[in-house]
Length: 589
Image (cartoon, rainbow, N blue to C red; front, side, top):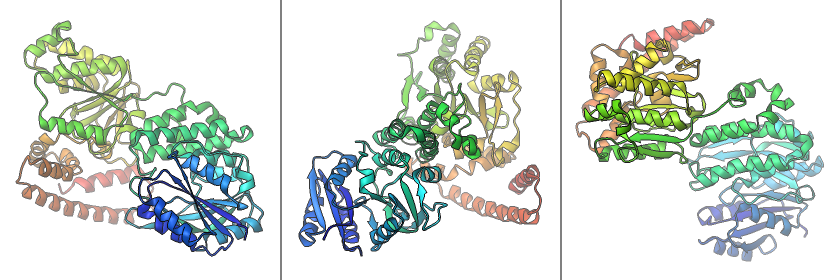
């Protein structure tokens, strides 16, 4: 019996999930169906499992083997072997509902379409299922590929679809990761007839080691960028404006899902700016314009991935080296270049004022001076070895040309700062250090920060940035430098206050300063974990009890806030709500 549908399944070292996948396929209710498994050089027991099913279902299961070449090559090979009029794709670690291909086949033939699109289940690592690909399409209605690109929101997967072989066999998958992302945009740009099924049939399972799960993998990141470039280069020219629009939305999504590479996605958006802003679809999408307004500016630039730390006067301790490891694994992109500044690569003798500070034992200021010099020259970030990375903050490098944060209302955080090359703030800091050291070799960098940003720039701290729902910073240097709220910078962006100072600041806060005390509560749980892990102190019980008390107290405050909001549900003055929130948040601390 001739096959109506051919299902192509690339397989590479999938023995853990393969039987579940194959069982879901051989149990399909559509009789006239074949399954083409392309073993892509597996080194585990995958081929043995496939051969067992081929022996059991010889008329439906076909197994081919190739040298490991990637999913794109495997799919291209499978298309050439396919006998069916329609083609579906399944990943070997996923599975499908019994009536999936029967239903899609009936719909696509009834409406005489080239592509049928169905909803799908996304299965989390914990087994929770959610329904995705809910498009604003009617059933029993024919749409176009352009319609799909406009509404898909960057959802370019191929496994929740059924394709007419005659339409897609002229399009080859590229030999990269995310080959389906590149391929889908090209196929849809040729405007196939598309129909929609408002039911999920496919179970997309997030497993460890899958392409999308490897979010820090440099190769998969590079290929995710390359997929967009391939689609733009090979799509149908007359529909390029919709392709550019669709992939701009995808890049924003990828920047959110892979924050450690966010600036690279924004750079590609910047490269696409002329085509993107000329797109009629972009011009009608107010939200996308708002989301991309920074990156489509001609003069936009981001802070580069140079991370400077210093080691003057002494060797780094084990604790400091562990802190440094957290920058590499959590704080910055894997593409970041960590550069240690010390006596070997910095000429202290060249700068008499700095030599004076160095000879006086002011190694901290010496390090800040050379960090500021390096940032002034080629841009980047200056970090302290006391700093612990908790979350990735790479997206922040694209938001402004200079970054600082508050430590308290009257102090600035010296543990992290950043700027683009030749930014005036770094020039002012370099000059400020030289002048201050001439008067006092033991001057601190914190004092120079206050003079540079508070006094010379007339920057004023506003406590509302700690509780603002949208903006968590104040600006200076003609709005090119953002100085972030302590709570925002420490919690939302992963730059924790120096853990070695947490106990000191807690004591300070309990004696009357609620500002920093409340901010610290966002990082204290991580601090406890840190102390336990590094055995800095075995006496964590009092701190843990204090955290529990604070959590209860904060929960009570949240309930009180909820009551206030309910009482003011018809009150639209957002600024007043912020003030109420601030009062409630602090009044019992």
